[in-house]
Image (cartoon, helix red, strand yellow):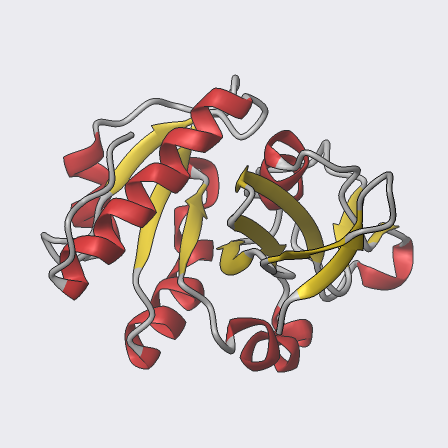
Length: 202
């Protein structure tokens, strides 16, 4: 349904509602999901970060990410406007097991997903990968290059994650907007190839 706006002389003009694409940003606890959504969003992102407290000691494993002081308890949300006809909505998923009940709702209608991998805690992204594989949701893996993490080549990480050869992998810095855009472009190209559609120009 079209929305209606009025010009300066009161004449109504019809405007087309932009097409909205949903992309999920997933990964383990502390992998950089909130950071990536914040770096990419053109608007102030909606965040549901809460401070980690002693009450979560038995449920939130912070080994390898001891500097992390907050956690996402529902989702992060951001928006990117491509042009007047297309907007991308980013949904950062919660990383802990106790919030998995939210995933099916967030994944409904998603174009695809980015799984952020932290080589300090690589096994943490297995649940996200399994989730998208089981549901046939296209995804790419962004290896988030933390300053204090050991660097591995992408093929080494691919073997460790037992990824199919056609799943794209990209090195990225979740803090950097341009780096994040390249991850999203990789996902869009991957989806286009799976659908047999022309790959859009970057």
